[in-house]
Length: 387
Image (cartoon, rainbow, N blue to C red):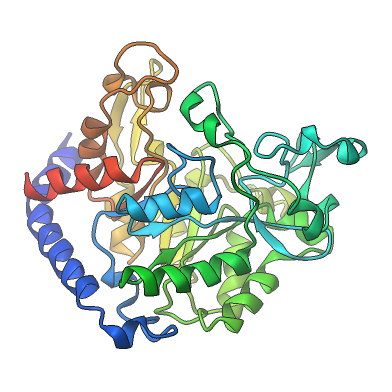
């Protein structure tokens, strides 16, 4: 109880600081001149410290409103006020290109099942210990993937998104980097992206190492510096350690449930769990090669068996003590994804009270949050800062 009271006491002072941060960042953004907009001249200005806090990160774009990891989703996230766009989850093609898909299995996010010419590509693989059946990006060339179109991944929760099925193709990471340039010039403000290396150990075993490919493209586009507007993330600490030797970008270690083990730990025989990584010792180790953490929200505030919020942990304070920022995931408007305290009704696609949930998580002192609904996050931040 004492810990929670201390955090709440610190929260009031933090709001004043956050207000100043938002105003300062807004001024910096509005102050971008023609010089900053010219062909990448704005890159490297300010770094992570230039982002508003709490930072609103468009999770796979604006995936609450458009099929995820499409330029339709990415553009809408910017339109709705996202400070950073998670573009994208990076997986490789058979011929070594990086594309943006939530998972290498694309049966649930593309219309590949409607293409009879690819019927024989359907297969079952073991992905990070889990038997998975479908179509996998590593079995397709980029040219083949470009014949597919994206579809809504969770139609039961987002039936309204299905009207956009088939509208957009699968973007490559190189296309995303070009898009970032174009949008920065078009909008007169620095556009940030937050790509993730997906299943890096799995792909390295296939001879499709992700980190070197990411680094090569970042270097090609001059976005591999400490202050570059590209934050790199991964659920595998060894992937972040590898990236730390290849680029100078801000790096973030993603963390799943406390009782889970990163897959690279499983492969290496490392017995540690996420619970070990969020101890003071574990956090000090992470701070040696990364600048931040992307924990599941349940590591910030635990939940009871009924799904309602329970106890605020010390993770925020402990991480800040060693200089790490925290960008937890994922805030969504729909009832099934909200803590039970903030649900309204039982409809799978019905909205609950995300503003209440945002306010509760912001009060813990997190530095930002991933959300499928950037507009909700921006308004919630405004309420929090001005409250």
